[in-house]
Image (tube, rainbow, N blue to C red):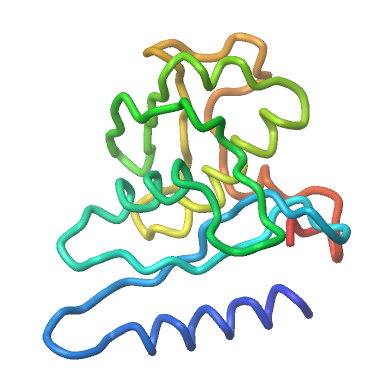
Length: 158
């Protein structure tokens, strides 16, 4: 039931983001939670009109959360080297510091990126590379939002 509540809230926020002459877009951006059973929780962010949504969402992830009780999943020194969308596959190349992540920290970083970006209609899968290279210790390189469903209430991330 909780995912339905989150979707309803997101729909209300999206409807409330249009105002005046300038249209803005609101999206959930996923960060690590400090409490509860869920590993990731959404914080809603507004992107200015004219900004590429993928770029805006990636920047939000790098900036970290604004709400208390949430933690960044991507180390502060990481930058976006490039990103491109082709045929439903969004390839994101991060700087070298992303490769310092391992274990649960890497899993949470990967899936905060995937959950955040997969809400874009044109994104079906996400490929994350570091300095142009795949992380070889990953068991698969193309990540989908379905991969991000793990332990938590009703099997969901939130």
